[in-house]
Length: 375
Image (tube, rainbow, N blue to C red; front, side, top):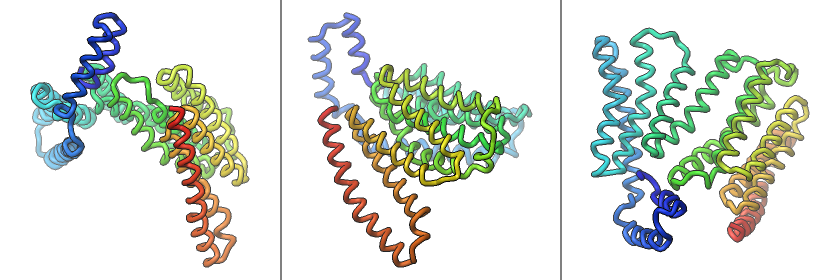
């Protein structure tokens, strides 16, 4: 019960282990004492920043002294890095749970460095995606045992990193023209599945972690997808029937949809609609005209806004509005600005920011209010 106890309390009530009145008294008691156990945000920031600094310092220390260590010392150091932080986290768990979570997170992060060092010690064959796969497996096992947020976030990031690495190796570092769009489409759909996963986990911290992981990655991955679909060398003249690319495209679309179904159940049909939108975008990428791309991205942004209104989620409305604004700005820079003089283009850009931003913000606020009324 190291995370959100309310989920466990609901399960016990449904199983008949406690009655509803007892459950409500427990909730009232915990609400009354929440101020004494909940970490304040300065403490959370301090723990997160301290964990990052310790991880970076340990890695720098190992890198600086690695050549001067004997093989036995190197192997002992690897074991200490991987296991020492977990042991410390277990020892301090009863005294300071937040610090225990931080130490366990550092230990899971150190597993990646330990795997790389072990491969160097024993001169194992180099296949870097395999190292990420073992790191992801270790993070998944740690999350299964500990049920803590850092392990979940690492698993959610390392599994797609491993699959992406295998794809890059198979396509010779994305040198194949069709490899880039496949990778970009899969990562974008996966980030969207994370971003729209709000009700699957019992632990509220897990829900927030997955949501933020998807939300932070969504806009950069959208830009990556838009760029690589249009600018990938030879993509427009490359045959799409190559078995390797067909298999990769199938995994890129199917894997995020399976995850979305697990996270959202019957409401995953909206993720399927987003996947159809991405497939259509990749089809448009094979044509020379640029205007349909901007129109399609604007339509996708409007669709994300409508998705947020339908499910009462204001963050999707905000994300859709940001994507729409980015699409309009990109269209102005690529299609309009070079056709005007220097002063006219700057005036037009200023008017676009002022008038367009004002209109978009008014519409966004109205839709957020509507979404909050349907939530």
